[in-house]
Image (cartoon, rainbow, N blue to C red; front, side):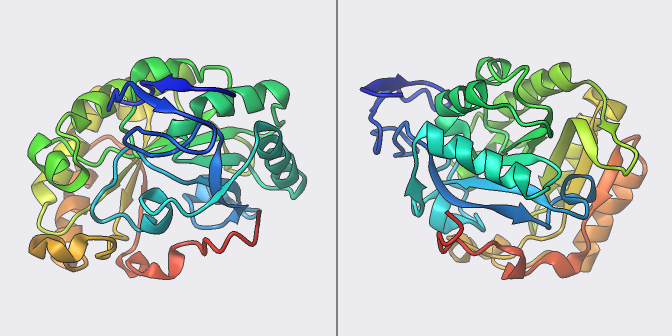
Length: 295
């Protein structure tokens, strides 16, 4: 995409001018993709990473700016390298040639136009994963039908008070619920190959926050009631105080075993199937190195 672009892609609806390498919107990103890493990644859900890894492309910039973001240096800090659509396509081809199970686009929302263009040039023979914080417009997600095979959204909050406090988005739940419904409409129920690697479907992630088990249980109850076996759930215990979390005393720690078991017990009483992380995942050793050497 060249020239000036007036952007309303995400729920922020900035109506802001964006140029190729910089923008005036909430994400501050230009229209050309800015990426911080493109490499096989082994730390996604088992059906995504498998044995060969997920071909993950981490995009810089984010529409949420969560105070506890573990990838803060790229989501808010803007670290990354601007590439052309052709170069993005080359990264997709390179990762596919490495034998990964899928192409995994992490936080690509600011670059939807370029992503659509890239996949019109080349659609890999392996699944495409759309990995998002969940704060999406359903109409933007609709544009990805036929491109994305697997959706991997977060559903962080039901409470507008919490989403406003920690992610500066009081309307988070409204948009997350609507966009997940559109994702499920597109993908249908999860489909796997003979090796248990996901080929199509929607996995909804939820990160348990310290001092906020009521929110976690309410999120799971909503997903169970509205989607049930149409989705997989990924319950994450990996929280550690990153980013600006030190400024919020109630989340300035990892979750306790009691908090984790309380949420897990509630999940056990529901019809949702999926994955639950162990508490020893609450460490920064699983945060990728964004040194740009793999670009």
